[in-house]
Amino acid sequence: MKSSDLFLIGLDLKKDQKILHNAYNDTQNTTAKFNLNVLKRINDELGGNFDLDQFKHHAIYNEEQGRIEMYLRSLSEQSIVIPKSDLSINLSKDELIHTENSHKFSLDQIESLLKQSNFEKLEMWFDSRNYFALVLAKNL
Image (cartoon, rainbow, N blue to C red; front, side, top):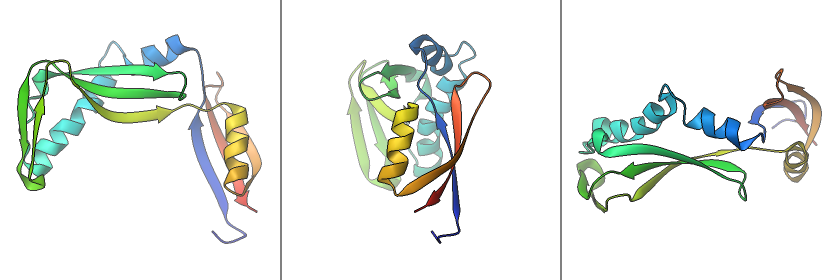
């Protein structure tokens, strides 16, 4: 970055675990469909043979790491082939595929990360519930 450049980043803030659970395990299955799309993309782009009906979305909050961890749980013992990656995978029933981490931050963590990255915070804005922060910073 040039010394005159600005850096703008949006960060999800730590919040009540029930809110996080409901957001990542929504009743409309929006997050589940998003998560299963990983396997669909592998099928479409790499010739995989994942049967999406044989997986179930599973999301948990890892408090120690401060993140939502998303998985896909195999509903049966199955063998997967991904020809364009020259890969074969054998999955046991209930075996998890880790698909994503969604980190949540405290204000202290944000300040610390900015300092560690040699940035100075210029401004910080929040949504009406203080669930998210938008941070404007510049390189020191």
